[in-house]
Image 1: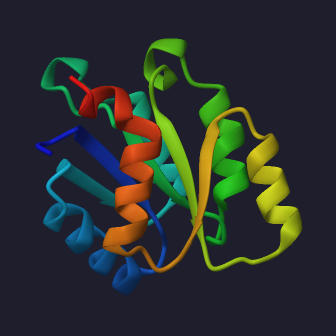
Image 2 (image 1 turned 90 degrees about the horizontal axis):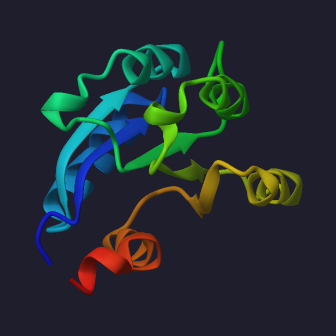
Image 3 (image 1 turned 90 degrees about the vertical axis):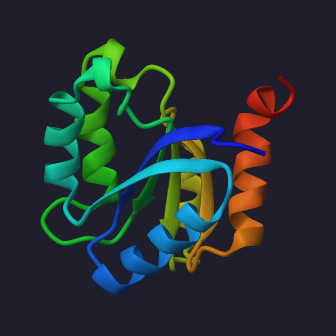
Length: 140
């Protein structure tokens, strides 16, 4: 399995968690570029200003729910307002410590959310995400 996910974005306000998750993603053979941001607002700006020629548009976003100022739900509202060329093809995985059934249901019902997984990330969880959402690339 080689670099199935060319570019990914981790959005989480917890710097230690972000460091660990980035380490795991880069250790996993499916991931090539992993960008980290600690604020939802910064992530929206990043997506608005991506240089598509550099092929840095994320294939996958891991999005924390509970962040100050702009939480994961607020991010999704702003994400929905971005141009289609920006959001097309991006898979969003909600990444949270929340076990609240309302959060899980809300994620399932959001058209931009592809999956909901609990923190912390593990190689096993990453394997499941890759196989579930990028199996068409694995089959090539």
